[in-house]
Image (cartoon, rainbow, N blue to C red; front, side, top):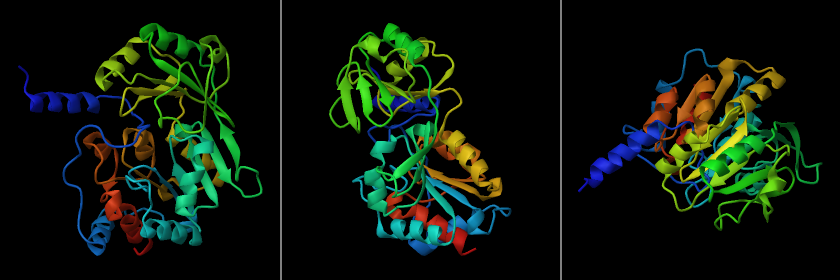
Length: 324
C-alpha cells in the first residue's frame, strides 16, 4: 500500500520537471514554495524595496511592466482589489508601458480589462501568439498589431495518434475555437464550434489545444511527450491540457517584440507572474517577480518575490519601485 504523502511528494516532483505550463481553469496544482513574504502593506513594500536591482531604470516612461492575470492581478473569485486598479492607473499616469500577458484569446480579454478599468495600452494574448493595442476607435476596442500562426496539421495528427480519445481544438481569429468534440462547460471562452477533424487540418492558426478530462496530468504529459511534437512550442496545463503554439512563441517573445518596437531599455523591463506559463517572461525580464503562492520552480526563475494576490503583492512591489 502506498503512502499518500509519498505519492503527493512524487507528483509535486514530477510537476517540477514539466515544461512551462498553462492553467486554463485557474488554481494551483502542486506544492507552493515556502518563504513568501506576508504582513501589512508597509512591511511588504519594505521587503520589495530590498529586492530591487541597483541598475533598474528609474524613469517610469522607460519601463515596460507586464502582469499575468489569474493569481497575479485577479483574485480567485475573478475580482480585482481597488488597490490593484489604482496601481495600474498610477503607472499609466506616470507614463509607464503597462500591459497584461495572458493565455486568453483576444476576444476573451475584454471582461478582464473592464474589471481593471484598463482602456489603453497593450495586451499579450494566446500566450504570446497575439499582441493587441487597445483603441476605442476600433469596433472591438483593439487592433491586432502582431499575430503568429502555423499549420497545425502535424501536431493534430500526432496528438490523435498518441491519444485517440483526446479533445482537440484550434483557435480561430475573430471567432473562438473549432473543436473535434465539445470541451467541458466553462473551459473555453469565446465561441465553440464542433467540426470534422479533417476540417481542422491545413489551416493557419495561432494555437492548438488538447484536453482529456478523464486523465491525470502526469499520464497526459507522458503521452504528449510520446507524440513527438516538432517545430512547435507546447506547454502542459494545470489539468490534462496542452497548449501548442508556433515555434519560438511565448509571452516573452511578444514582450520582446513590443520592447523593441517602443525602443525601451531591458533595464526597465518588469514582469509579475505565478504559474508555469509565465516562466519565459520571468526569465526574460530584468526584474521578474513571482507571487507568494507560486510553485518552487517558478520562484526559482524569478529575481524577486512578493506576497499573494489577495495581500496586494503586486501593488506593494510597484509602490517600492515608484517610491525608491
